[in-house]
Length: 270
Image (tube, rainbow, N blue to C red):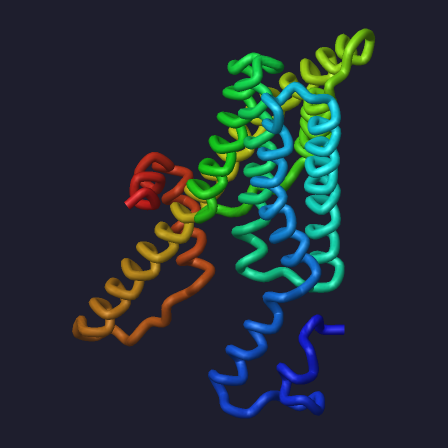
């Protein structure tokens, strides 16, 4: 199952005629898959959630219950759209961009509403949103070296955040209100710890990328040097032509990196 209607492939299971026009039809059709639709639903839920959250001053238990329902639907669709996209090969460029935006939009809207109503300290909102935006920026900064994978701690953090924020959205009192405080404390702790772990992974990934680039630059320089020496020997009287030995080039590159790693790193940075 490809997730692309037969009509987009030409109607009979054969590729659509028209070259680029046919390819464009396939791309346009693949945009409207169930995973992307769930992502768009989550985006549309954000303004609805805000209106429900702030209705009648923001303290009416009934409106807060409806707001919680909208928040819960958004969190559930966040789980399902990614699973469907990976399972049925429905990953699109739109989904890659819209999915993280929808995640941060609903969480950010909930946190800002709660802080503006005085239910949640602003520093908690700042820590969570700052971490999310900072890690997103960090991923883009190191994307040239590789992708930082989602960790188990990151998934636990998401679950803890969703549970804690959902409990704060509800107008809870008594022991449940005390319990939600500790759930939020766990969520904040996981937010900070996983954020530091992502920073560590980014540093390791960047160092590995620089080392790989330095080795490649050293191999290239050694190849040029040996090729130049070979041409010089071939042009000298009484000497024959020589062939570049790849193993010798690689060995020379390794020895160059070991002898002066700082110089190789500088070459890679350039």
